[in-house]
Image (cartoon, rainbow, N blue to C red):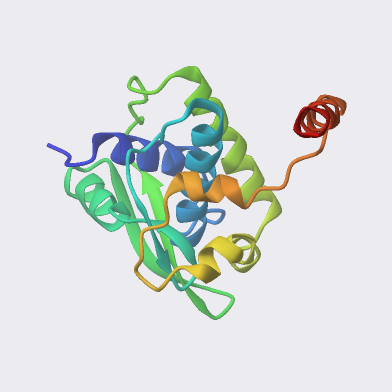
Length: 174
């Protein structure tokens, strides 16, 4: 039995939706990170249930190596080391349909959105650069990076309602 069933299911689903040319370990990790941060921002919880740790190429789900090993051992996926433009790359293939019954439609929609964004708009290097932000820089290698902390580093547009609220607060303080 999988020790992290939600993580395993998310990893398997992502692998099942991507061509091996489009997905390596780096992009897999980034899809998981951005999907979890986005879902956390909207719904207050993680899709995968895993923690993220600082690694050389950005935040990585702490138990993703275990998840891929368990998926391989159970015959759901296979992977191999390959070379991609002179750099090592882990390629993945799904051998079975992924079981996504444990996810709500919003989680799947966010994962799909992140798959499209990461796989079709980025290289492994460019998506890693996207995660090398102030949050990542402020952590030590191997430190846990809480999903909630990522929200503090997102910029947001100031709305008319925000301005009106700030003016009311200023008037009340005077």
